[in-house]
Image: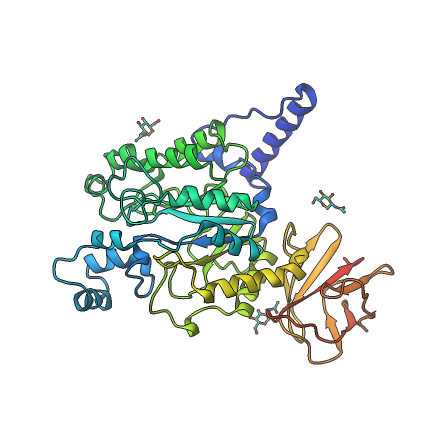
Length: 460
Ligand SMILES: *[C@@H]1O[C@H](CO)[C@@H](O)[C@H](O)[C@H]1NC(C)=O
Ligand SMILES: *[C@@H]1O[C@H](CO)[C@@H](O)[C@H](O)[C@H]1NC(C)=O
Ligand SMILES: *[C@@H]1O[C@H](CO)[C@@H](O)[C@H](O)[C@H]1NC(C)=O
């Protein structure tokens, strides 16, 4: 057992004793060091939720160009990508600056209720929205981002506040993405030049904005990013997290990821993102999340996106099943357009996911990994479990009427149903000579996701 599990066990026992003796719950105080912070138990809503929607929106949505469109400014200015340098030269007048895109970020069709309806219809249980990406433009009226925020320029609206209210109205959890570093902020650049010995950017920009976000919008999740150039001691991450867990208005519910300074990810913080699109080969021993964009080439919107570059619904469900079976959460990204519309292709994918989850959600929400995560029968199978029930999600329809699962051990009380037909128990028989069972499959129900769930009761 790792020391962090051990100490979180001790902390939970202290909490329990405190409830029993004094009826007051838990008053553990975290100290600003990783040993203490890492021992905090993750608020349970996050693991139960399983599915979130990630939203990348900012000034980068205006040019909306090229692979990882949200990085355009950096790659243009540093001449790191010649296609972007070319694109800018051909399409914008000499002297055009990145800041000139901001007034064109108009969001004239932005209706937070429409977005929140789509997110709720997707079956997701939380939303993570870019409050500020590496370009530094804040999607709320930050007092320390003068003339580079969504109220002073562009939409002239508090995007974080408006979307947050709409999302919460639909009972989804509200999370904020926040980039520590800003590519071209003068204070950041001077701290960088000092080898991160000075902390002016942190004192005057990064930390005031983080505290402001928490106090104003009370996010239940902070998705930290842009941390990797400097150590956590530069960002004062542990001091911030100790305040967040001890004294902030969201201390009991807030969940954070693991990007809190160079070398932190996959090691410290709340749940682990590790690198982008982290793809563990076997069951990790720590709660994790995979983020994945429907546009396979970008987080931010690309005006030059092609249909063939997007994930279709079966590939989204396949990716999600892999993640959930391995104990992760799946954070599916869309990049809205600068005018405030969500491209219909993204909306269609999200609504399709929701339709699939309406039938199969029992195999996803609040599940735990089973003793085996996957097997290759005649089709590929991903397992999840809830209490004594086991779910086998199959990623195509078997070609034969008799379908064999290889791993479950049956008993006299074994019952098999397809979630599409909950009232119709299926005939089954133990597999001859091996573990597993043969199931007599019914007629194939329609599934736009090309995936179905066999619910197995009374198996081990
Ligand atoms: C970071 O934390 C240290 C130790 O508590 C403190 O001395 C320093 O002032 C903090 N820096 C900022 C920018 O908050
Ligand atoms: C199932 O098959 C895939 C593709 O051939 C392979 O990558 C994977 O390792 C197999 N999984 C198991 C559990 O055998
Ligand atoms: C299933 O397990 C959860 C905890 O994992 C528990 O809260 C719940 O009551 C259980 N449900 C049933 C029907 O046993």
